[in-house]
Length: 227
Picture 1: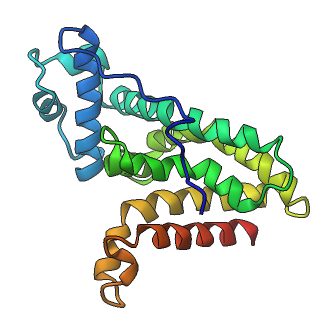
Picture 2: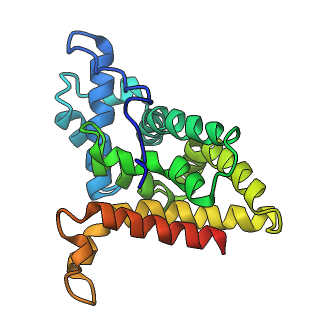
């Protein structure tokens, strides 16, 4: 099975600024807020607790850098978009000149970077959980932020799928894409549920079976998009 993301082909995230750099506080606030909100909820964590977790010396540091919760959430989304979007869009654009690409190729190009986030030390499951929570845990504002995060990637994905599925209406593909995107975030965020499923612990959830789990997951996504 082809790799979902190639670190050698993709730009690496910018190194974290040094503690002496004024930008360091802002980055620490983003990273700590992302982790806490991803694990506990977008509104469940106080801004003061985020400041303390980030080790900021000034209690008003978060208000200075972001203004408030909405601006902080948008800044975290932008931080993650800068990692996700270039990787997905580069692969989707490359498919345009590749004859014979398939729906599976499109799915891997569009959503492979989300799966690749799991192995990034500064991102991991917290980043995936945070993005997933935007749509259902932060109201209309979160949905607007999520839409901005995904807009360019999904527009390119739609174009690639339309070329493969000329008999399917544009809005139908859009609808399927939104369901697929939700399945990606929820499927990754809650995959540990398979250890406590109604069927009992599933073999797919056991350590060492990640490749099969990924293959099965992609098969499910491709089937949903293809109809």
